[in-house]
Structure formats: structure tokens, C-alpha cells
Image (cartoon, rainbow over all chains, first blue to last red; front, top):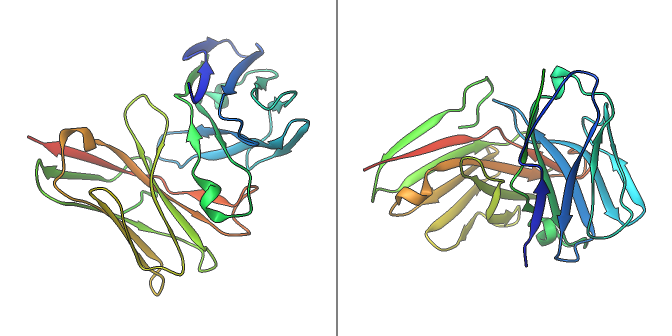
Length: 116
Length: 114
């Protein structure tokens, strides 16, 4: 299994540009999510999905869109990039059960985004 | 302990010594806790978890201790090795904690001295 993969690893955008960060997992996990990680702060949830066709907002959703057309893929779209969106973005997946033990999340390697 | 500012707290230990990393959590209703390890340039990696009905759980070279009275969590790493150098952070889960219930701490940077 490749686990959770993310592309690209690095990206530089100009203010106002749009782009899509790709995320894929091959573990047949129902739950997928996007986080951003900024210096001195913990991971903050942007959007998440509990299955194909279902998405919901996290803690910091503004400026981002997601879709989940398949179980495997969960792309994150930046609609009009702003310098405040400079961050490292992590995608994660896990099984979706009611058991607390299902919170063992698998994270991708991250995408480092700089918006100038 | 966990950082509240821009800089992560740092713990420096000698190779072979034991490390103890601390985390103060915020919500007394949290019922599940996780420790993650994040190496430079990589995504977080699950280390160990503990439910709130336990006060100790052991894994391979790692032990997590939970003190619900003072809302404190610690991660002990035995016989620290160079590969243990990373940022370690805890996460708590409670029904009101964010959209998916997970709240992450800010992390402690563990540095291993040769």
C-alpha cells in the first residue's frame, strides 16, 4: 500500500491564483480530511469527508473547497490564493467506525504552499 | 509542555537516556488521547493512544501516562535513539472538539544529543 499520497510537494502561487492540492489513499478509508499546519500552532482542520459524495467544513474552511467523488481521492481547491494561506497542508485518512480506536489517522507527506 | 507561542518548546536529551514529553489538555470531557511524532518534512505519524478510563498504556519503548485530575498527558520514550528526533504532539478527542472531535496540541521538539 502507498498509504496517503499528496501532490505537489511544493508550490508557489501568486495572490489571486487558484490551484488544486491532490490527495489519494489506497486503504479504502471512508474518512478523509485536510489540515493546515502553521508555525507555533497545532494542526487545524479545513474540511473533511465521511465518504464519497459527503463533505463538511472544519475549523478554517474559508477560501477552500473540497469534493469527494470517489473513496480514494479528496482534492483541496484554493479558489483565489492569499498570503494568509501560506502553510503546510496535510491530508489524512482513517477508517470510519464509532470506536474511538478508529482515530488512528494516516497522514500524507504534506504540501508546502507559499503565496506571494 | 505544549507551546502557546510561536516557538515550540524544546527538550534536549542524551542518546540512551529516557525522554518525557508533557501535554496539558483543555477539556475534562475528552475521552481519548493520541500522541503523534512528526519528523522534519514529513506528515504526523501515530505513536500510541489511550482512553480516558486508563491511566497508563505501554507500547514498544513508549509509555503514555494520563492524569485526569490535572488534565495532563505524558509520553515517555525509553533509551532514546537518534531516530527519535522529531516534534511530538498530543491530540485529544471530545464531542465538542472541532468538527471531527480532534484538537491538536502545538508540539514539543525532541533533540537527541550524541
